[in-house]
Image (tube, one colour):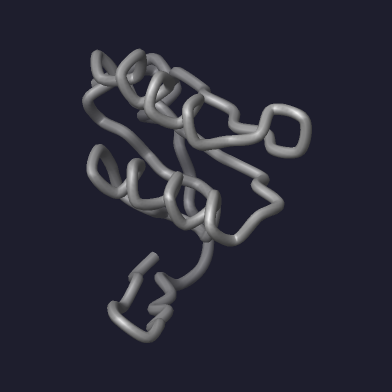
Length: 92
């Protein structure tokens, strides 16, 4: 399985929330600003949507494609965390 990792550093709260909502439609949030996307064929669509939301002078979004071998070497250390906001809980 190929996997895409998308991370971002977005200055504005409104833009950051919009980008997070787009990414939640396509993948799983694994840290506050890091998502794993299993349907990598959707990356062009994701990039297009996110590009229209961010300010390229202030924000930064990174896309990493991991091959099957790299995905199998992925290591996670630590407990999953649950973060609850006003409207929902995020578990990572």
